[in-house]
Image (cartoon, rainbow, N blue to C red):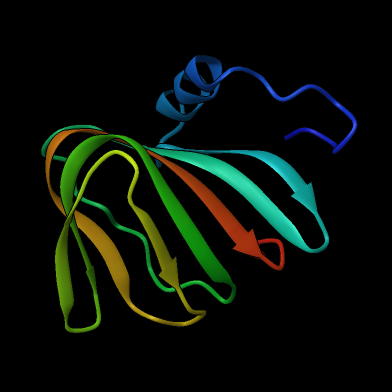
Length: 111
């Protein structure tokens, strides 16, 4: 995790760090108002996340799959941006190509 005045690693390095975790997520920035991370889900993976206490924005950097939030179930791919309000059920599924997703929580994720 980097402080705001530190250099954030390249996307390739962030992806490698996320791939080395048990849950595919690597946080790279945290300040009181937000936290940012990279989430990597391999093709065919199951997204086991549960609702968060914070609002969340996803930006799909690469890969393809589907995203479900409430009754909405849609395809996602590079360039898609998703907003999930706090406490709302959501997950990625039917992952065709490894998903690399930039994640922003506001305020900073608490758990």
